[in-house]
Amino acid sequence: MTDDRDKALAGAAAAAEVVDGMLIGLGTGSTATHAIEAIGARVAQGLSIRAVATSRASEALARRLGIAMLDFADVPRLDLTIDGADAIDPRFFAIKGGGGAMLREKVVAAASDRMVVIADGSKRVAAIDAGPLVPVEILPFARASVLAALGAGAVLRGGEHEPYVTDNGNYIADCRIDLSDPRAVAARLAAIPGVLGHGLFLDEVDAAYFAQNGTVSRLER
Ligand code: 5RP
Image (cartoon, rainbow, N blue to C red; front, side, top):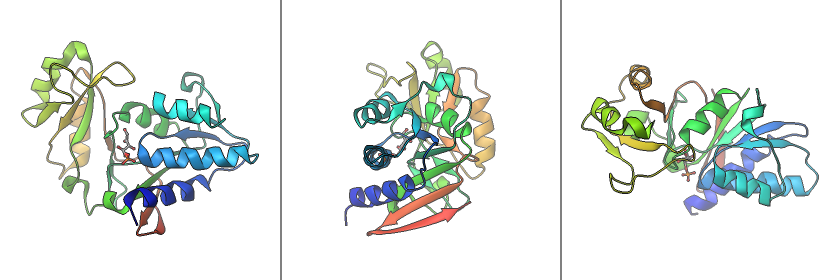
C-alpha cells in the first residue's frame, strides 16, 4: 500500500467527522487534498457545510468541488479544521509548513474548536526533535536580519536568488533547530522581530488519524 493510499484513507476518515451545518477549516498539502476531495464528494451528496481554506491551492480545489467557501477575514470561529502535518509525536506536538502554508494553517487552527491532523504512518515520530526542519515565515523586508537572528541552521527556501514566496507574500526559512525544549524554541522564534509565524504546532492539535498499510488509527489528545 502506497503512502498516497494511506493519505487518502486518513483524509476520508477525518472527513467523516464533518456534519451538516459545520464551518470547517481546510488544510493544505497532499493529505489535506484527499480530505477536501472526500468532503467535496459528501457535499455533492447533500452535505451542507461552509469552509475556509488555509491556502490558495486548497481554496481553488474546494471551490471546484462545490464547497461553499468563506473569506477567513470574516470568520471569528470554526467548528473543525482538518490538516496534514510533516511530523507529529505522542505529545501531539507537530511540525507543519512543508507546503509553506503554516501561518494561515496556524491562525485557522487557533480559531477552531477542534483541529484534527491526518497523516500517513511516516509522519508519526517518537519526538518532533527527530523530525523535519522547522519552517519559519519571515517578512521579506527583514530577510537578512531575521536569517542572522535564526543562526547558521536557517536556510532561505528557494535560495537568495529565487526565494519561495508564501500566499501571504513572505519568505520561508527552513531551520535546523534543537527541539529538545520545543516551547522554548517557539517562544524564541516568536520573539524575533520580522518572524511572522513558524511551523511548530504545540497546542493546536486535538486528534490525529494515522493510516499505515491500509489501517487507520485515531488518537485523541
Ligand atoms: C503545508 C503543511 C502540510 O500539511 C504538510 O506539509 C504535510 O503535507 P503532505 O500532506 O503533502 O505530506 O503543513 O504547509
